[in-house]
Structure formats: C-alpha cells, structure tokens
Length: 254
Ligand SMILES: [Zn+2]
Image (cartoon, rainbow, N blue to C red; front, side, top):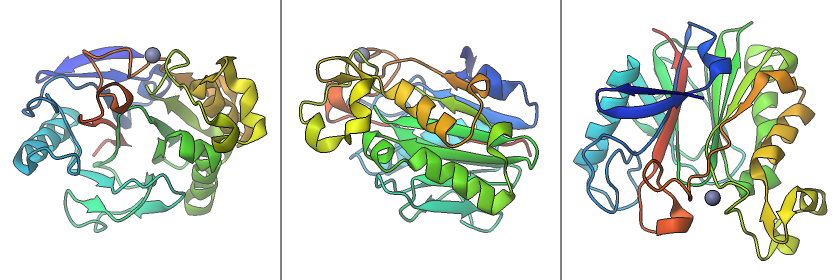
C-alpha cells in the first residue's frame, strides 16, 4: 500500500487498484476529523455513541477528499446480505439497511465499510467497470462472504472472477487474532490458519477464499497491517472496546 495525506486525512491505497485511473479508493486511518476521545478523530460510525454532527462532518471531509458525490454505507451485521447501490438508492448520504456487501456501477458514489478489527475487502472489475466493498470479519469468513460477494458481482454485472482485482485491508493480524473458542467458532478447515495455538492468520484466510472464488493470486493485494497493534493509526475494538470506526472506501470516478 502507498500512503497519502490530503486535507489532514491520512489514508492508504492499494497499488493493484490505483493502477486503474477510473477507480477512487482509500483505506482511511483515524487521522483528521473532528471526533474526540474515545472516538478521536475520523470516526465514521453513527452507532458507537459519538455525536452525530461530528460523524457527519467526518463523512463530509472523507467524501470531499476523494472527490465523490455521495458516500454510502450500511448497517453492518456480519451477515451475507448485499446491496446494489444506484444513483437513487439511497437518495443521499445515508446508511442502507442491513448489508455487509455493497456493489455499484454508478460513477461518483463511494461505498464505505466501517471497521475496527474486521477487514474491508475491495473488489474491482475493470471489464465491466464495477466495484464492491465487503465487511469481512471472522463471522463473515465462516459464511464465506467473499465467495458470496464474487457471486453477486457475477450476477449483477457479469463479472469474471479471474479479471477481478482485490485489496484486503487492515484488520486483526496473526499477532492479535486470538480465538480461544476456535473449535466452536471455526470450521475444522480453518484450523490450519493457526500461526501458534489459538492465533489465526485471517489475512491469508481471506486471500485463500478469494482464490477459491476464482481470483488470480497476482491480482490480490494484502495490507498485512494489524489494527490492534497500530493504535496511532487505527481504531481497534479488541484493544479499546469503546472506540470509533475507520472507513475503507471504493468507487468509480465521477
Ligand atoms: Zn497485532
């Protein structure tokens, strides 16, 4: 990933996505924004107890920084629901009802996943000029939400998985992804992702799930950045419990 700093906001970009000039994207850190502790500063979640005007101002700054007309997110529930975002759905900067996969072909719209430890995984189809953003926590991985997202891109846009580019964002790294009850929480095929007893490499798991969905390894980029370890840059629920959510955004240039 390469770092950018614009308007006091600091964010990262995947090289595999910035290769396409028609794509706008950013993996935002907590830098910038107007939220105060324990949400300081660029908190993008409306449902963690932060003041609404601060979250709205943070969202406005993010949208302006990327030059987008509209910024769309959803109430994330660790499910498999997807939402196809169009020019009129939703009408303005709004949260859609429950969805963990956002898709669009409409230029000027940013699809935002809010996260603090869960990964956001961005997908781009250069053949059909379509983007998707996926909220990918361990519960989503258990449900193979990445396979579901690729399937939805095929249905909605006719996407061919080998043509897709993917960026796996920051999340809990193998240093911190401890699951004491993994025998109950994870299916046996996940157990080989243990790096030491009880600790899992969830980045490699996502990469393998994308490859199983038909993507080429060479078109997948992984941030390999742990949100819990990087307190200065990222919110982490495991580290702080009461905290904000950073945003990962992808869209098509207006
Ligand atoms: Zn860590």
